[in-house]
Image (tube, rainbow, N blue to C red; front, side, top):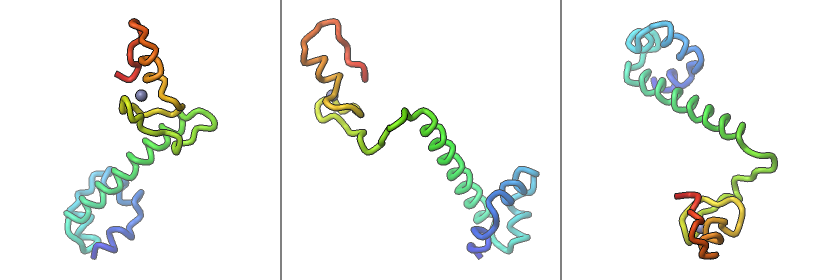
Length: 103
Ligand SMILES: [Zn+2]
């Protein structure tokens, strides 16, 4: 039963939902529970949101950006791409007017 929900084209399921067809109506047509339709609609929404976030993140990535280079600084806990951690280097220089850029 669940497989028929998953087998349904996600775009088609969203389209039916956006056209105002209720989960109950779609569920009856597919012979599944309305809960299964709601669950699948939520999964599709989550997948689309994830794709959107990835697309936006890719848009702002500088050329040559490699996410594998992003690490957590052991001293300050900030995510650091270029090593050593600039914030820690600056705070070690004991300059009183240098503030931690991550905080
Ligand atoms: Zn640091």
